[in-house]
Amino acid sequence: MTDPVLMVVDGDPGSLATLEGTLRRRYGHDYLIIGEATPGTALGRLRELRAAGRPVAVVLAAAAIAEPPAADFLAEARSVQPAAKRVLVIPRGGPAAPSLRVPVPLVADRQAATPVLRAIAHGMIDSYLPAPGAGRDEGFHRAVSELLEEWAHDAAPVLPAVRIIAGQRSARAHELRDALARSSIPYVFHAADSAAGRSWLAQAGQDGSALPVLLTYTGEVLVDPPNDRVAAVFGLASLPAATVDVAIIGAGPAGLSAAVYAASEGLSTLLLEREAIGGQAGSSSLIRNYLGFPRGISGASLATRAFEQAWSFGAIPSMAGPVTALQPTPGGFTLHLAGVRVSHARSVLITTGVSYRKLDAPGLDALLGAGVFYGATTSEHNAFAGEPVFIAGGANSAGQAAVNLARYAHQVTIVIRGESLAARMSQYLIDEITATANIKVRTSTQIAAAEGAGKLEALTLTDTRTGSTQTVPAAALVILIGAVPHTDWLPPAIARDEHGFILTGSDLPTSANPAPGWTQPRPLETSMPGVFAAGDVRHGSVKRVASAVGEGSIATTQLTQYLQAQARNP
Ligand SMILES: Cc1cc2nc3c(=O)[nH]c(=O)nc-3n(C[C@H](O)[C@H](O)[C@H](O)COP(=O)(O)OP(=O)(O)OC[C@H]3O[C@@H](n4cnc5c(N)ncnc54)[C@H](O)[C@@H]3O)c2cc1C
Image (cartoon, rainbow, N blue to C red):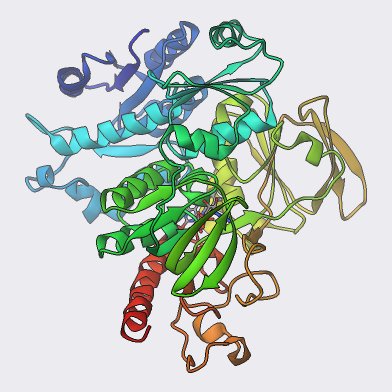
């Protein structure tokens, strides 16, 4: 395989040579380093590389480039090489700068910084970096390595852990790809009717009549396996025999955070997940508002790091199946998994999050996963390159999905029933959408029907003001219209609000507290003593990664208090 490219564009021969040299010394063995003096020649080169099928991992452009401005060049580079990470290299300033990750002029002069921050907010660039200093500039290299890691996560892996062979738009293959991508498990997809697909099917001894077929790094061949069977390949489907101190149900940000804190404080901790590590956050391609990541982090990276952290403290992860029932038993609780297996815990934390509300229109259900998707996915962007894509919904998640898909799609149309995006979307996203040429917003519009033979081909849209309908070509519809909590499996003794969100602490009606002598539920404790809830699933929660993480950690403290009280008065 040919080495991927790192491209540097700088009109100043001296700084071009410094940048090229810095990159070549560190990455020259694994990447081809290409230097260009002007945006024009760089774009020509990027087109040649695309025609030759050569991957481009990162394009770095000096901020000093004026014709066209570097950020405009990087924005255009996206249309030629959509997967490449695009970085603006800004000058270092002042003697103190080498010790800072952000150069002094940028911090001190917000006006000078504005174009850089605007370029990020508008998605014209993925990141900015101070030019490397002399010698080994580890800050510069750390940033470059992180970009390469993110690029490699989305690009086809060199050593896939799983090969999936299925129909191009198979709904089950979509679920599997999404779960693997969100769990950062490297996989390769082969269409069953492609030469590679046929060859891998033959190697697996399969005739293709039953799909999807999975070939794992251990040499196993799995035909349309359930999620827990795939999890077993990675050692993620076992359950401890002994009763644990805490069972956490749901490995989104709230559950992962609770697992880190509970395990690090010495509690035996079981973390149960039914689908993919990271929950909803795992499907976010760039989380920009989580503390400590000024340039953003992909949900999958955040989830992988948190998962490793929880595991390293001793938490036991298990994807043995969804938890389907919870029962109080002497000394604790019994959890039923997928209806067949059981696990025992002294306390329970419910962090099962939410799912998107369903859109009801003829034809949608039949095309689920075959062009129609609920929630933004991280694995499908490339599949719709150059095609018309629609997004139903007007909240922040819809805005983010639009901006991400606009990198690949020919046209992204946001469809909302209301009259403007302002009611439910943050202004920074509205600005980004307004500034992105290939995103259109259709207000007062409803999706009336979907059609297509085996895959989505067209949508019928109704203008709710006039009642007129229009059928438009569509390759994908991403539905992001609100959330339903995952609580239908809980016993009635766990009180919920009218939408199914779990009530905790002071939100609980006094009549919901059945335990004799138990009058004061802890703030995140449910109406069943010893069972806590945190994150999006909780009534009144703020639907954000940081809030879920915070609640996960607070819940751990409260359930530790509960366990200590139980130990004193069993
Ligand atoms: C596309 C997208 C982009 C987003 N971007 C941002 C952003 O940029 N910034 C931000 O702050 N927030 C963002 N959010 C919101 C944020 O991701 C959520 O607020 C956060 O993930 C909530 O965390 P949680 O742990 O409470 O629940 P979830 O993330 O929903 O996780 C719940 C987990 O529980 C599992 N589960 C459910 N039922 C069961 C069961 N019965 N048994 C076992 N497991 C079960 C689910 O599979 C899931 O993994 C985004 C959300 C989406 C969808």
